[in-house]
Length: 627
Image (cartoon, rainbow, N blue to C red; front, side, top):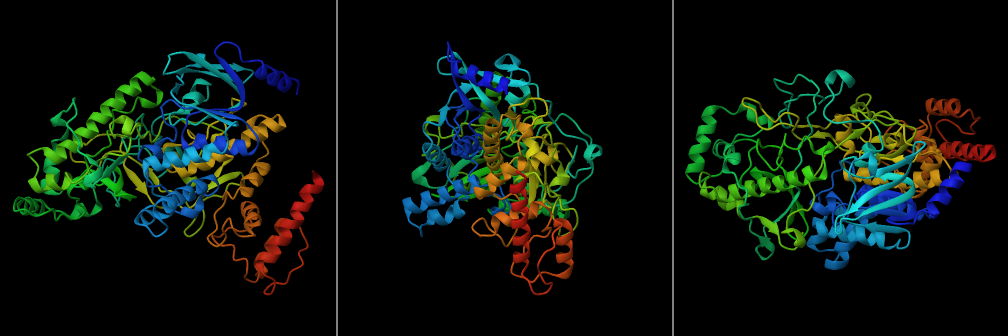
């Protein structure tokens, strides 16, 4: 207690020189996870500062990732759902509820980069005075930039990129919301980079792997671990609207040799889909003749035009989220060259970002202009260009590299593939009683190596769809060593486990939990790892966050809170709560045993919801009496 009082006094007096006044939360990284942490903390009455290196907050959704990556949309709610609803409302208000833009926004899950930026700004604007946002603030991963005392961070030093001046920000709790994990590493938290071998955790997809897209693992997949990092790219915002289309120009550092393998891929139809296993050399030669006669590809799994090199999802206003093409052996990903990124300086990262930009623009220019490609392929590719009304201050090109995976920390809980895979057919993955969000995406990694002769796909590319809606424990963002640091973005997990957590909806939910947990730690004078997780869960549930997913109970239902609490306690192991059904004798006996209550119910007659309500009510009364 005495230390806490002294720390608070120190924070109040720490305004001299380049040091800034103390905040409750200091958040390094203006990613969606960092933004939601600040909003959640503000709702608890706490002050935050967000320190963002670029000139715009919002991370990847503001830089081209407009097609939200989530398999079960109702699995993740809370502040993430508020973001989605704000997106939908924006399009409805501006274009009308029956407009094409509203249809193309897919309920708010698909959006233009500029709209994501407006929505984040609007969400933050309601907390002026509690949330400060400073852009162009660079944190360099150096222990000298973290002031620590007795396993607590007192302050972090950043560089104002506009002036070159050094600034120090002090706070009570610090959050690493960077994609790279720079703050956690500088504070001394152990981390991993690269791929674990299959022997370490027995995970599907671990180590070296060559896998047909939508098909089986192929020859050469030995599961050996290494230091390889999955590829990065830019999520492009393309359009085929002539009134808003900017033609891609040949970049200054263009190297035609990099793209030549695309020529034969186009003529022969070579691709990575499992159906290509049945394609013969004769079929590829026939494809070449058909294309030469003016036709398009007829090879199973093959794509034509710009879709050969980039996978596009429709966004409003005739725009697309253009990602790497998983069916291609050459696309907008640039494997191998990004491996140093997680632990490199910003000087190195900026050079790579420029190199990746030139590579990406060069690939598109090649597909649209190189005369070794069929003329009608080039014409099809040329229908697309950069959106003129996006990234106006950056040549209509995304400002931020898609860092799919940086450092992965070793926290209180280490998330692996088994946490996302069902324990048996039709059942859930393991349920974590300390869950702070539910989430759902495939186990998914991009390539780590470029094209290799004789391989069916690039090493490291996999999409394992066996994952089901899972629970994420608080411990994935809690380090063991630092008392006032949370890691809601560079979380604790294996390469394969992290591959499903690394989606923005999950990061937003973890950010919300981190903001509330920080507030509880401050109010109770606790280390973040000693926060009462039940109290944290109560607040999350009260804010309509889903901690365990049920198909038949939504956050709007009166029984939502009860089902969340009892579901995490093990009363409802299935995917449905079935509250209106009569309780079975087996369930009634199991619930009596688990609750240690003499439940007043009759098997076959009393609705399950009534029995569960009694358990929840009496359990809540018991907890209140003990408190």
